[in-house]
Image (cartoon, rainbow, N blue to C red):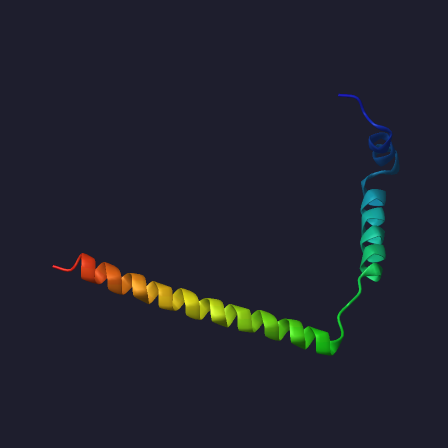
Length: 76
């Protein structure tokens, strides 16, 4: 398998230099992130919690219905 120029560069710079470069790239990318404001964060969190609660209720009612149905179909 032929080595590419980037593979040779990684070997030449060493493992620690690659780790430092990786961390610098992470910091650079994190600076580009547009963080939500406090009110947006509360809105997003509320939407997620309401969706989870509605889903839990739906699955719970569905489970109770299936349990009731199975109980009546296979009851002795």
